[in-house]
Amino acid sequence: MSASSPVSAPVAEGSSASGTASTPDSAQRARLKADVEKVAIRRAPGSNGWKTVQTLIKERLQALGYSPQLEPFEPGGVNVLASKLGSKSPQEIVILSAHYDHLQSCDGADDNASGVATVLEAARFFQSKTPERTVLLAFWDREESGLEGSLFHAKAAKARGDRITQMISLDGVGFASSAPGSQRFPPGIEALLPDVHARAAKNKFKADFITAIGDSDSAETVSRMEKLGTALNQPTYGLALSVLKRLALSDAARSDHASFWLHGFPAILVTDTADFRNPRYHCGNGPDSAASLDYDFLNRVTSVVISATDAAASTR
Image (cartoon, rainbow, N blue to C red; front, side, top):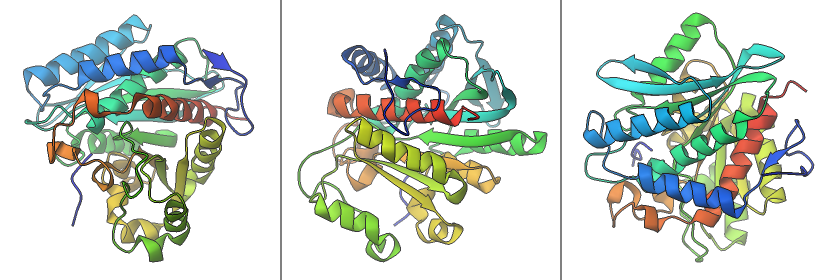
């Protein structure tokens, strides 16, 4: 995330329109942990580690039966993309994404190996699915240097007239704490989002929830994520923000979803709130290492995200 400015199962109601949901079982947890450990290496753009992770993503997608495409852009960036064609409305696109780059001097396990691992798990889930809308799995490059990869893709998508019905960006989805007072918020949140602040206060400001921050056009998916969180015992704060609230809450635009907001597409950021809870954000107070993440939390969040993506890809 960019730096701050200052196994199927029966579906719970509202979870997945297609009838199955991702289940946070032990096998999924083990895969997520293994992938975070592989991706959480020094991988600044252009470095050997960056190339290693890019190759890992491409080869994993190929092994799952996808035909990944490299989307190069200047200066020297490469997005990695893979699609599952929709059966009913293939011209309508649902994007699930995470950036794979990070800073030169940090392993970036939460930011954003956790997001990459979740999208790779989604690739496994959709391998045997036939979504009604096309699902695009995207791994953005150069997020840390100004959202360059997602901006390139969103601009091109707008020029092509792509029909993106929902974009979901994962950025920092693996750090949690049950300690009272472990969650902080941007200044002014009490006035801007009083319900959110009150909910957090009632929970003694524990950093045990995931947040889904969307625009007004993403309200249905945001609401579905909240319901899924309840069903999967993963507290989820869903926010569908008006244009004015998005402008007032600058921290809501700190990742790749903002590139799609800029070009008029509905988009959501799923995040553990980064430096508002994680003292190791950008390795500021200790290493952002694979060992610092909560894999039970990541496992539940992954199931929320995959099931919400599956539902968004349904036309029903």
